[in-house]
Length: 141
Image (cartoon, rainbow, N blue to C red):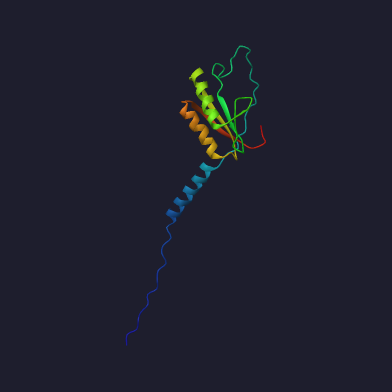
């Protein structure tokens, strides 16, 4: 009769060097990705000049198109309501007078995305460069 001789399984060796390498990588990752609080070292009261010009003083202000939460379009600083077709005509007439015209879109967070795209398409059709598009919450200036 033959008996099966069972050999004891050996425990796999724990490689400490690999564990230390992984730990160092984690520590480096955490220190790099941590945001540090920046504290100003000095508070300075800088002198002001009476002859200095504001940055962009010689540039024309961009034409601002506002899209509210309901999707209505308003143009200019006075906020005249306008339709998409009216906006296209207005942009073409403005570009004829000023070929360097820039457009800024001021859109509400809940504004329909389709309206914003239509404004961008109208600007591209009139060959107007977009300055920036930014979002405001409803009810805030």
